[in-house]
Length: 237
Image (cartoon, rainbow, N blue to C red; front, side, top):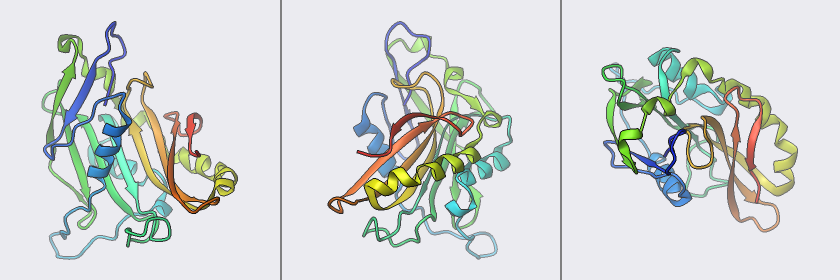
């Protein structure tokens, strides 16, 4: 969900994947709906030898998905958005039976190597450890579509350092511990420019149980592309 950087009028780009997921900037409800759709369990498939790959975890680093994507596509590839989600465990979400920290989603939207005007997406199959074939993304612009420039929503993988998020996460322990009786990092993402940011940012998602009443709550923080500086802090209520 994106707003062009150099526009006099507000435009909204909805990316519609083959799965039928769409979102439009300025709407948290739309964003949450896209997240819920993305967090659906992937199909249980296996590699060519029939063996299941070991699912990556946050213990491998907050950039584990980013590293896999860079290895698959190359550091010069221009990407729009990256989404990686991790299990929070049953102590925080009773419906989650997977171990806390286990990766559940790793996807990327990137510039098509065949047509630089277009976006494609691929998803890491956690069972086989292989990425899916690229799928086309339909871009719909609400506003003057002729003024839309995809380059405004792309950044080379080489300019992103999600590994720096580890120190940011560590620095939040005391703050989060004061609010949540228990919490877990649930997402590490690359967000494209939108109504709230005029450039790409990294995003950390957290989910936990409030110490005051044990209600499940979630939050997030936007972080600079070098993974070092929090630019928007919404981690706690």
